[in-house]
Length: 297
Image (tube, rainbow, N blue to C red):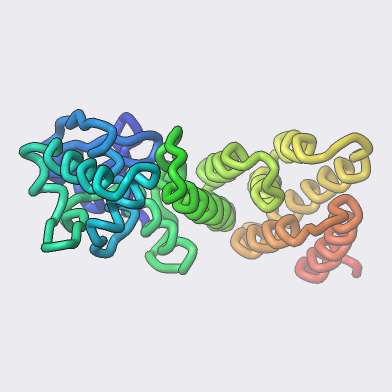
């Protein structure tokens, strides 16, 4: 999957294999709404913005009546239909480039590139194991969907996208750690923990990345952010585990194996992390001694 996504200076995505300005119409919904046609931002009234966002988040054709009643649920039907007609009319010369109208149905034009669709596609590929490797830029999985919008039809899509992005960032961190690309792995792990500070799995994977790189102090700092008082045993265990990793990684013939092993150890922690981590270290050291000739069991 390497090379799938490039990122513009402002963090906006560029279509796979493309360049800034190569796509005539782009719709951005992450970190805020923006429609760009021929490289220029198009100012739109709120009604037109909401119409395009709704169509972008529903990839099938939608009945006009359903669209109107969903976007304007608190007004009489006749008023809602009028609002829909106004939203379409106020798209002016861009209307036929962004909306397909077929009788009683509306749909976003297939030629419009939507950032959240691209991000979800990349995340699904990564989670599903598709592609040749992790994407070059993790920002595809970051950014809130339409922040400040609180319509019911947005809330469920926002949470779905958030969960997909978190899982993708965790998996990206894990894969990059195993590949020895520690800087990128840590960045992906930090993105996941920043997006959801209480997410245990994200912190475990970030700790694994720090330990695999040999940075026990950073692992301890991450651990401190997750544990309340009385975590001395867990801190000692992490320091011990870091030493075990360093010893095991000194064998240049085993970089991939020890990367997988240490990631698995930390990701496998459960509800009693200090106790389970100590047990994991014991088992890890046993496997280490068995793997290195000449060491006693």
